[in-house]
Length: 299
Ligand code: UTP
Image 1 (tube, rainbow, N blue to C red):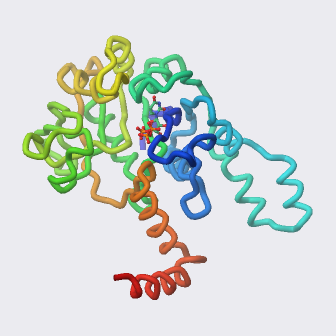
Image 2 (cartoon, rainbow, N blue to C red; image 1 turned 30 degrees about the horizontal axis):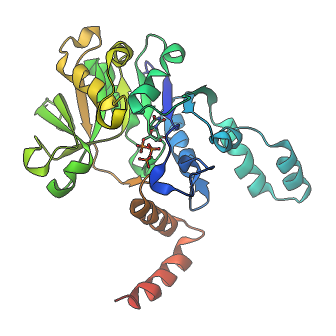
C-alpha cells in the first residue's frame, strides 16, 4: 500500500453531552468498551493502516486520554514486580502504538473547528480524520481502501454506510453517482440530517474521512452553522461541489458494508459492549451463556 497519507487527526474535544454525568470529568472516548477505552480501538485501526503520526484535538477534561497513550512507570513497576506479564503488556501497549501529538481546542466550537486545529500539524498533504466514538470492527478495517481511493482519484474521500430510510435523518447524507468501482461512488452533494422523504440516498456519512488540505482553506471561511458550531459537513459540501480534484477538490465515497459500533450514544454504546464482549475468546462463551438465560427471562 502506498503511504501518501501518513497523518491522522482525531478530534476528541467535544462535551459528550449525551453521556453526562459520566463525561463531566472523563472524556467519552475513554469510556470502556469491555476493557479497552473506545479511543484505543480507533488508534489501533489507524496504526494498522500505517498511520503512525496522530494528532488528538483535545480540551479540558481530556487528560485521562493523554495519560492513556503515555508510559506509567509506577504501574509498570508494580505489575513487573507482581509477575503479571499480560497486564504489563496491556498497560504498555497504548504508549507504543504511534507518535501521538496534541493540540487543544479551548472551546468545542464544532467538528469543523476541531479539524481546523490540525492545520499546522498536517501541512499540505491529504490526511485522515477518525472520530473517536465510531468503532470499526478489526475484521472489517476499511482505511486501506479509502487511502487507495484517494490515491486513485485525488480530492477527499468519505466513508458511506447504507442505513434504513427511517434513520437517515440522524446522519449526514450523500447524493452520489456511480464510478467504475462498485465499492466507490462520486459524492456530488451532502445534506446534513435530511428528512427521510427529502434524502437523496440512504448513504450515511460515518466517522472516517480523508481530506485534501484544501479543507483547511474552506473551514477558515466556514461560518457557524447548525447549533452555532462550525460544521464539518458544511465544508465537506463545498469540497464535494468543487470538481477540480487535481487541485484538492472533489469527493469520493467508499461504501462500507462491515461491522461498525457507535459509542457516542447510550443505546448504541450498550449494544457495542455486548457485541464485542460476545466476540471475545476469554469472556465470550460465559457471557453468551448468561445473556441467553437473562434474555429468556425478558418479556
Ligand atoms: P460528537 O458530536 O459525536 O461529540 O462529535 P460530542 O459533541 O462530544 O457529543 P455530544 O453530541 O455532546 O454527546 C464527534 C467527535 O468530534 C469531537 C468529539 O469529541 C467526538 O469525538 N468534537 C466535537 C470535537 O473534538 N470538537 C467539537 O467541537 C465537537
